Length: 367
Image (cartoon, rainbow, N blue to C red; front, side):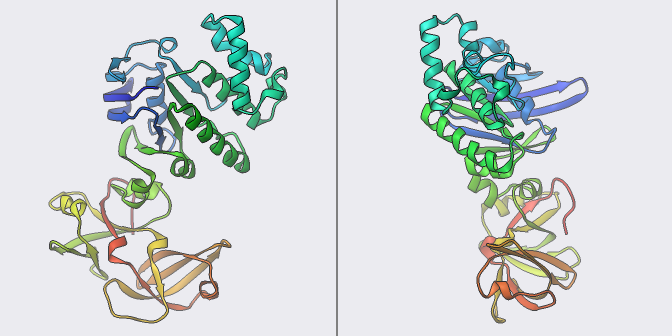
């Protein structure tokens, strides 16, 4: 295993900056995910770690060793590609053994290691089958086995589940995590799928337009996004353009830009750090954090609204609640009370002070 450090890494393709001034430290044995939309720089970063691209600027280190210009075959990394990149004319055994034969490993050891890894990915019964005769999930396991059999320090996975159906993706998530924990191998996983990132990762780096916007645990990324892009990309969010009216040690008082609604927010160091910055600010709150009250009660951030529409998803009910010109999304667990909500019903909603976050706007439009 190995830790990975990217130090002020930049990658340019002509005049296009694909990755810009990236600093990352991936810990030994960590399951680390690069998350972001297509074209955000996550695969380019993975390929610089693999050695398929060299950085235009900056350093790539494995541990304390400078790997910036080391060719791929000398990096001891295992790579699983989006399209698996298997040899269709070869059997499962031959595909998995290929990397060992290139390394001139003795025949007896090749057989032992291939049989061992096929057992771990639960394909020992398919040793002599052509890979073209396998299902998508089985081909994915072959690709994993081929990457793991060379006993790499680092495992790199580039959107490995994107070609599978939803049920098979769920199964393969568990399989990949099981293998990663069994081998205790430093793993970097590239995906645009939020559910994969949140459910599998020790930590996540969120990318957009070649820039890393936030690094943190799944809980940190979801609960405390650093800006509107991260908040919007990870799950559902209510974002409202605001201005700060006043602040003290405990509370921040804000209002919508047109002054129509006022909110009270618990203060904390992140909010204090925003004071004096020129970026437009947004109030952010997750739909599941908003409370629907049985009756009116006095307190901050309580508003009367009208249910505009109801979406029933079984265990969850989504409401759009209109408060004057403002529309908030509210997600409720399905219980007897919540399942009775109808369009046109008046309700009182509360935005808990400790569930609201003030964040800078770096992209897109908000309410």
